[in-house]
Length: 132
Image (cartoon, rainbow, N blue to C red; front, side, top):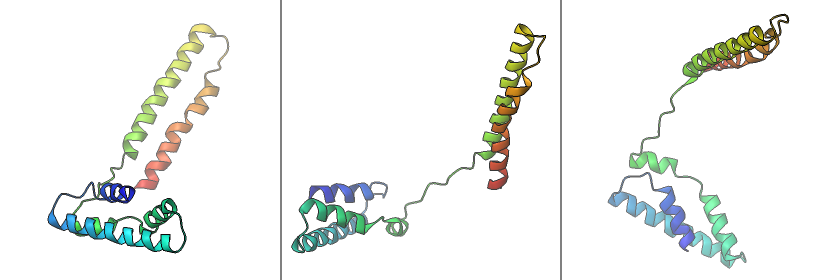
């Protein structure tokens, strides 16, 4: 049942080492092994029984909270993304204007790709509004 042990070790890798962690890991592993043996007795193949036991067990978020593992706080970068998209759009539009003036000043065509480029900061603006 090495696959079960590896799975339990992976579940508890973020939890700091302690006696409580080791006891809970051992209990979880025993419960999973019992579940696998029950499934094998019901006629499942060993590999199928192991996979079903792992899927049925789920995750250990509640146990992690009890053991004191802090969940990472997701930082909101929508304002930074908005600023980046505005400056990026300005530079791209400036490039279009330069190419238009330098290579074909008799035809003003830079306006058309400008409309396409402006969708980027517009989308980031609405994303920023939604995150407020």
